[in-house]
Length: 304
Image 1 (tube, rainbow, N blue to C red):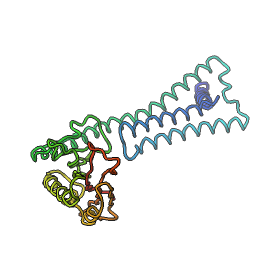
Image 2 (tube, rainbow, N blue to C red):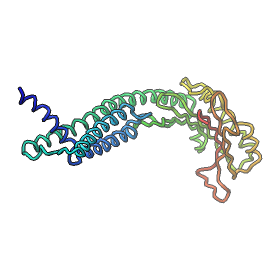
Image 3 (cartoon, rainbow, N blue to C red):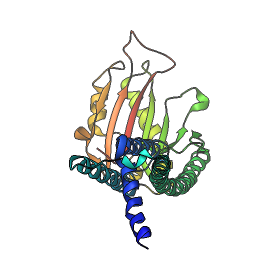
């Protein structure tokens, strides 16, 4: 009985000494840190977790604290005259030390990997559900564009999960050689429209007044379809607003077909939660590129 009782504290001391001696504790700290870094990168880059996986961070900190305490214990023993690792002078002691170190390292690594593994499985299911919701909304927008006679193209099918969301485009005059007049609707992973962008072609050979009339007519045709979409919008103004702002129109008519105009919400404000941007994208006459041309753009978004 006495021998068994003495063997238990000896075994515990052997185990603690094995974990703290020869820099083993520091190696485990570095191992866990490297493992945590890799798992965190996978979580962010592959599984797109926002915010970062908090339970994983807490578990990593706890494991590092455990190893730090063991290291400090060994340092304390050495400074007070202890002989850390003396038990390893025997063949049996060395064997127990190796086994203890391997089991402890594998165990701590497995705990961290298992925690993130469960999280990764959950994130994969969430991402699949988000892709399905976004695809359903994109499909509805695509159908509406095609029914209106637009040439529809965009992120269908959704091949890869994109944390920034997806888009569906409707070109108004694709068959007539006008590749600039189109509308783009951006959808997030909740299946909600977050941004609408209208582009209207500008022909520098025509007077600015005529270009503006053509642009407004094209915008009306595209906005009618967007305003009737049976999909969720992050803000009502994304669907309801569909006109070129008066300050922009005045600047356009006072300018040149070869001079860009850029106006932000600080210039144009917002409408029902949608911030308004307007721009005239063009090239100088010397750098004019026929296949790119020029266009007026109206952009509606929810972040100013």
